[in-house]
Every structure is written in C-alpha cells, then in structure tokens.
Image (tube, rainbow, N blue to C red):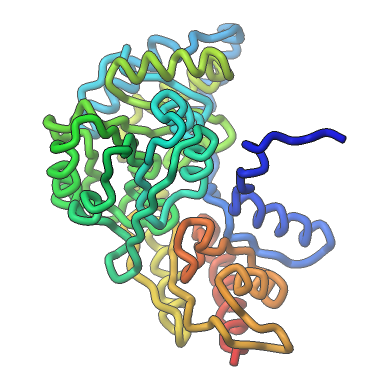
Length: 397
C-alpha cells in the first residue's frame, strides 16, 4: 500500500477550492448553483495586455526564462513600486513567480525552520497556515473580530511576540474580510516591529488597486522597517489575469536571492508569455481600472444592503478587495426541516443544499463565526444569490 507523507496528511485542502468543486459538481448534476466561493474577478483581461502577449508569441518569446524573471519585467515592477507605492526596490530585489501564492511559499521556505513561530492575524487567507505548516513552522494566530474591523493593533502584535517569532504574514486589503489598514494603523505595527529587527513581515498587497477608501498604504514605506518587509503583489486581481499566474516580491536582496534559489529548484522561471504581457500591466496607469473598481463598489453596496435586511446577520463595511465577511453566529443552534446548524460550515452546507448558493465557511480563514461572500459576480447574479440566502436564513428557527 502506498503511504503518503506526514506532511501531506497534515495539510488541509483549500476550503475555497473545495467549495468551488462542490458547486461545480452540483452544476454538473443540473442544479442551478450560484457559486460565490472563489476570489476571481468576472472581468476579462484588458485587450492591451492580451495584445502584448500576442506580440510576445509573434516575437518568439517561447523559451525558458531567467529564474527571477525577465530583466525588463523586473524593471517595470521596480517602476510600478516607485510610482504607486513610493517604494524603492531595485531590479535585483524583485523575484517574479508563478502567482503570489508561490511568492509567499518561496519566502516562508527561505526563512522558516522547524519550531519557528509565524504570527498570522485572523481572519487570514486560507493558504498562509498551510504554507507555514509545510515549512514545519508554528502558526501563532492573533484573532481580530468584526468589532475591531478584523484588524490587529501594535499592542496585539507585541503580545504575540516570543523569542521564537521569525515571521509575520498579513494582507491589506485583506482576503477574506476586505479590511484595509490605514497609514496610521501600519505605523502602529511598525513601531512594534522596529523593536524586533530579527522579525520579518510578508505584506500581501495583491488587492492593492481594489480599494474604496482612498490611497493604498504599504508597510514598507516606513524607512525604519523597510529592511524587515517583503512586499508581495501580482496581476491576478486588479488586472483580471488569474489564469496567467504571475506574482512578485520586492524584498531585501538577501531574501530575494534566497527566493531565487528556492524557485530555481521547484519551478524555475515563470511563463514567458505571461511575463511579457505583465510588463504592459505594470506600465499602465492604474486609472484605467476605475470602471472595474466602481463596479465592485456598486456590488459591495448591493450585498451589504441585502445582508443588513436579514435579521441576525452582522456585517462591517469592507474598504477593499471584493469580499464581505459577515458574522452569522446568530443562526448557530437553529434548525429547518430536521437540519440543525452547529457552525458556519453547517450553515454553508445548508445554503448550498437549500438555496443553491456556494459560500466559504469562516473557520477556513480563522474565524468560525463568519462566512465569506465573494461579490466578484454580476449585479444580476448577486441579487438572485442574496434573495436565495435571505429566504433560506429566514427559514431557520
């Protein structure tokens, strides 16, 4: 009998991918399922980016690529960091990977040894914990509930630090909550980090441009912690390039070199066509995204208005990304047709079976009182989905 590794056995399947799979299976059976489980924009990649990819193919950019990425792409990313974030990362501080997920994995595998502690504010993106576990690190979760807008403070951070703390991972705008850290809130975290120069932070900023609160703020902007921060970004979300698979980091050179080494043994360089197309995205003025961002803002309002009309649902107002993360603990212990809801996972399965709407339970993100709704869908689809959700929740007694 084939025996799988203990590492694999300890790893949880991605809850977002699992729920998406269940939704697809029900659709294949002919059920009218609406899946709001994946974080994927329903927009198409802009034409000027696709044109750049076609040009690259016509110019025969079809060979192996340098492990950290083409020089012209890394120079374009350097320019983007300076233009959009006020961050000075040279080409040699940038590593391009096959998605931001690989960028994060590269960093964790470069830094974390067995027993090293990694601070992860909750709610968190589902893969953070599993990547840390693969590296044999110890996740240290700091919970920040809806009453704190799902954000930690410097005081919360300092209370979690021990002599074993090696790394912290967080996102702004946040997946799954949509919460956005302000400059003042980031400065509060930096005031703690500067006292612990051996602690490194992964700042996941993949949703940077989908921000309804104003200017995006980066942790690395503070010069006194710049050398402790790895800034992660990519093209999937804002540029609707999920299938192209490209992420990147800006980091202290010693970490960039380490990630280059790790990536050289796992995947080598990212797809040549994707890289050339991504140069066009990096050079584009972010103002070209304004219509998409306005569409997401309108959808956010639609979903929040619908949730606010359902007795027992508690929501904050997310300032970025394209998720709402409502507290649904009011429904725990309630029943319908012999089905009793014990937790958010039960509630998601109930909504899938009763309303044919696929959502993701909050325990996958570190908060079992909540569930995640992705509003990366048309207003018509969202209106129908929220109507079904409201009807199903109102049936619970």
